[in-house]
Length: 128
Image (cartoon, rainbow, N blue to C red; front, side, top):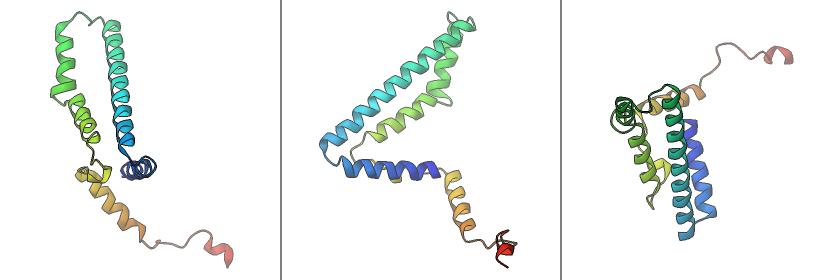
């Protein structure tokens, strides 16, 4: 919940500061660079782990890795969906679909803000 709001605030600040075509191109270029860096880094770690576990030449291990990353649960497939959505010119974090868990937590949080305490504050007795 908090992360969703921080993303929106940071995005609004960026849009205010860089509200032109160059700002959009800079945003897309930064996302491409970060995504490539993350992809290369994660591949390097995956290869290192496969070497350490002596699975580097095991095609079944490579198939399992591919399946996990792109099919089920499809970690990279989901990441790339978010990357492409972010690159759209009309993107804004508030326009993204929010998971039911986040919505439930948001409702719980908003209800708890207006709660009255069961007992008085420990500082109430100090003023008496």
